[in-house]
Length: 443
Image 1 (cartoon, one colour):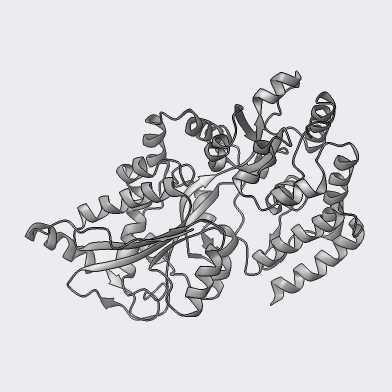
Image 2 (cartoon, rainbow, N blue to C red):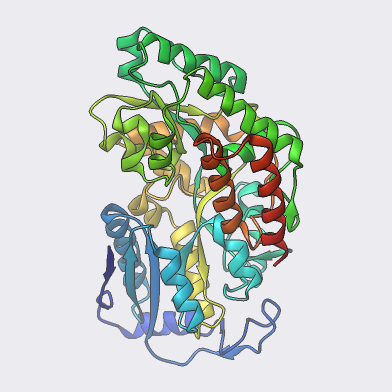
């Protein structure tokens, strides 16, 4: 689904407001290149008159309603700025953004996640916001340092986190109670998690598998690797060798042999990551892997009570991870206004209360504290509780994934699918993945 909206209505403009916005619009903006000192272009003063920014994001109707309310609030405070908004589901979002990029008509402000930020930065599509952060026009001081680092590439700030999330195990609490099985716990070892999942399968007499098979899930592999003291990437190359990946694939082969995970066809169906297809809500597994900010949506698909804990492995394998970013188009004519809107969406307590936890926990700890105190949704409170439990124990943030990451993710999922289906052995799939992934990163 794609929804385009006409400009959000502009309230009446009084002279005092016009003078106030005149100061805002006097901020440096992009003409055709980048901000001087940030992107290499010349600074051009903004024209004295109304500004309409195009804004594009993915998500559902709740996210759209919250985002439009926040943008209306901005226009109330800055009456010469209006917004032309477009939003759609995640499926096909990046295809559409790529088409826009190819035509040079990327929206002024858009939502992007870590899978694509590095690629768009290296292709010169996103605006370097570092100059605005350096002089305080975008306030990053209230963000966890690792969260800021996770939007920085080669020393340049290309994305400001729109929210923070954590990798989580979402499990069916009611099902485990009916089976008399224990609940998983945050930071249990991967071996203990496998034993737990196999025990759940046995307790259900094989009717329900204990866990989703995440062998093709780059998020799970990345945390596994960090638990071993390495990373997914080192610069623009893979940060791990064949031996580590083979161990990963063989671990999940053991899980399948113990019936801890479901049939390959079910895993393939859920591999897209779409909440409605997750096996914990379709009733095929007791647990699935998800982002913590997806928890309320997952619960809406299940009649049973769900709960969540952090991923297996050491807590320091986690990091302050942006659920998604706000990014600006490098070719926008209104870079200063874009930066001001980003600062408002991420740093305003009033905007934070409107946006809630739809994109994860507010990135700013100041905004987060204010928002969490007023949460009346028990599901959102669980998201906040997990974030607080992990906040002081995360490890250092890596750089966002480099260009080619999207293809690497696909190659990993294909390799895991081939192993599950018996089309190739773990060693052959590992060797093929390593060669193809390195080639994808080198292009």
